[in-house]
Image (cartoon, rainbow, N blue to C red):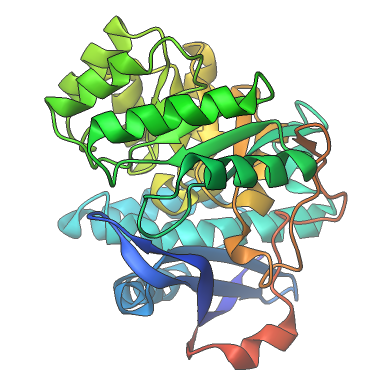
Length: 369
């Protein structure tokens, strides 16, 4: 099989609630779609993302370079492509934008492999389980971060009615003591139904974050996510060793090596990987095998439709993340019942953009021989 062309499209999708925080802010989720075409007529799709189309141009440029490199290669030989590409891109680093560009294509390579074998991704990965536990990341999604507890409770009730049993609330825009109390109030309002995780998103400092985490340690949270800046491995390890509540991190890790470093230096029980950074499905698969050997639990970062397949196909993956940002682009939300979603039976990675969307792209280009 041989790659003959890569089409790139940029879509600017409005967010249900604009994001406004010190790490990322914007009103749209920019989605970079790669359509990889082969001489044999099999086509695959992969996508990456960021908040706001201005940031996306960094990623589109990197993906164009990766696409130029991929031309002529066999897309089903993912490991060979990555090995050669890492040698090619070594001068500019083995992480960052170079990894993001090829990660987007890697998802499309797996889509091609699935379609050529007429298998869904979860089965091609090994078919470990036939349903995926999924959590809803839509609690406290307001841009200000100041939604009162009754609004958070309403969001929880809506998620419960939709079939979810695990939830995540984004915190960190308020002083830690304020948000710690909001979390306690929300857990009380849930009245023992479901389980809550919280995402601090690196917003609290090295002094106030541990104090707030200790205040919430007795309420049975599923995990506390990114309580420090992503590079503060020592601080997170100290929390891992001193808290009963699990710590979760990893969405900013690049490649298998970045994931392994988190396992080695932080020792957190949950590692959350983003396909755009971890090396696509190839990087996910490699990191997941190491996690399995160390009894580390894997979880997905965004990518909800593909995530159902990843959780089902991966022994070390215990739960995936759902948020509705790509529902319109990918044909609707996933269906969840009693906390679980079933993967699609159709061949592919589980995420396909219909051709009718292509004219709506705000930018496009084609790379071919």
